[in-house]
Length: 209
Ligand SMILES: O=C(O)CCC(=O)C(=O)O
Image 1 (tube, rainbow, N blue to C red):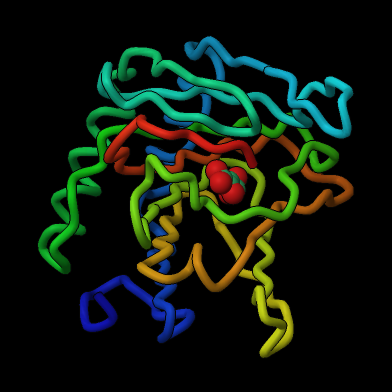
Image 2: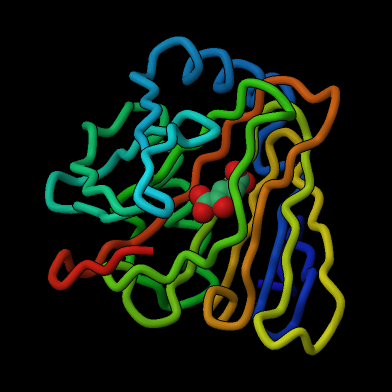
């Protein structure tokens, strides 16, 4: 991946790669507007210490019909692929399979942050249905906010990864095992949508996070 044009290696091990302009500004603007307008954005609740709280963002789970997922204590049956998202999944699958042997992405969790106050807390994407050491590719649209990473064993300082409009971040094998990530609140930021492409391998034995 690191040898390919357009890709930057942000971390060697475990691998974190970014392509700053997978989409040009025009395509990225058009996609942001289209997804914002056309998707059925949801705000499910999650249970914390016995109380229900709406998640501080909106989301859509999308993918193949059998790509069911359990997240934040809730089961999600995927919505049908939006044609634009299906097209992107194919494009990213092609780019990735040229670089590494990976199972094709069969689903995507899309996150919508209306402003800088909306966020996602510290977590790893390590649900059993993602299999061992999943690879996740995240396309960012809209207001550029950093994704913050921290090592689970605190071996090194936490660090930010900038996510420009139209960029693709690939979290390679081992990232979810060794690091956590969060989208922390930021003042004066506008709409941002992220599309996180995943491969669901099984829906058996889900666990809560
Ligand atoms: O919006 C982002 O870039 C972060 C998304 C994320 O952490 C996730 O979907 O697990």
